[in-house]
Amino acid sequence: MKKPRFIISGGGTGGHIYPAVAIANELKSRFPEAEFLFVGAKDKMEMQKVPQAGYAIKGLWISGIQRKLTLDNAMFPFKLLSSMWNSLRIIKSFKPDVVIGTGGFASGAVLKVASMLGIPTVIQEQNSYPGITNKLLAKKANKICVAYENLERFFPKDKMILTGNPVRQDLINEASKSEAVAYFKLDSNKKTLLVLGGSLGARRINQLIEKELDFLLGQNIQIIWQCGKLYLNDYSKYNEKENVQVVAFIDRMDLVYAAADVVISRSGASSVSELCIVGKPTIFIPSPNVAEDHQTKNAKAISDKNGAILIKESELETQFETVFSDLISNESKQVELSQNIKKLALPNATKQIADEIMKLV
Image (cartoon, rainbow, N blue to C red; front, top):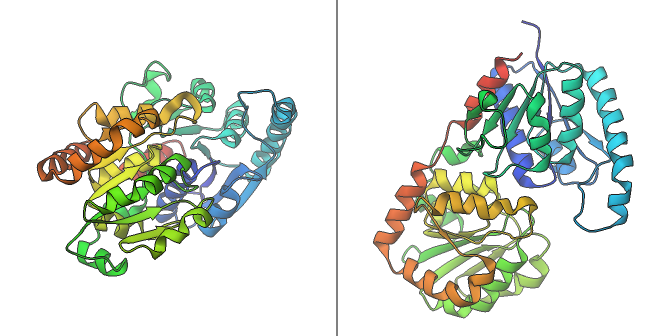
């Protein structure tokens, strides 16, 4: 068999980048001699993260459409034409066997051009409510790997495969609690709250934790608070408080999940998939500012099956303290949420997606 060549495109947020890298790693483990090229948006985080993971990347001049009238919107037709033209050049010179898209605007241009040229395409949709790019690409895609059931109203049923979302491989093999306690220098007699705002941080969750810090510490717990790099300057001062650790980013997610007894998190697709696999009692606070409000829909898909608690940002003032103190003091509630969210995990997602890609090579 000739050495396979793959173009993988996805970006804008960690939620699109990490699945793309996980798929590449899985394909590479099967075909060490395969060639990979990532395509992203020029000024987005994939331009750093993908080379860090050891892959080449080319950037397109593209960005999403804003909901209000902006200069960026006026430029959109030009950006679209430019990114289509550059996608054509990239595909013609690289000659991929399959093109894989994990969402974001850059993947739209690349997959559109690939399907026009008759090259097989695979879409990986992370959310319970697909974004505009993937909905537009679905008709021409060969396979659509989804993470949630009941997406027939968006995608052709015969192309869909329920695989789940690719997650970091180290989470599949559970880390030990004692190793985690030692790594983060925690008190093994206290419960640990883990606060996650996603790769860039979440302003509203940070404001909530700051406001409720004394209340939370009054529950006799310790806190690992990932505030995001945009917010570290605002919140690092709380590292001076006993039982509080504020960090911009967490490298050892396997250990931090092992340490956590309860999690407060945004409900981006990657976070939800990871939390299903590690099975932690979770309070989801969805971001209301994302396309199609998909974070609320992701969280609802779990909370409807009694696998997590959902609090909307607009309800934090009235509900947060009651909900949190009920959960942290109720062992049986923690066990119930943990068991239910674990039932929704799809730990073999990356392998299954790679299987589907291989059928097209």
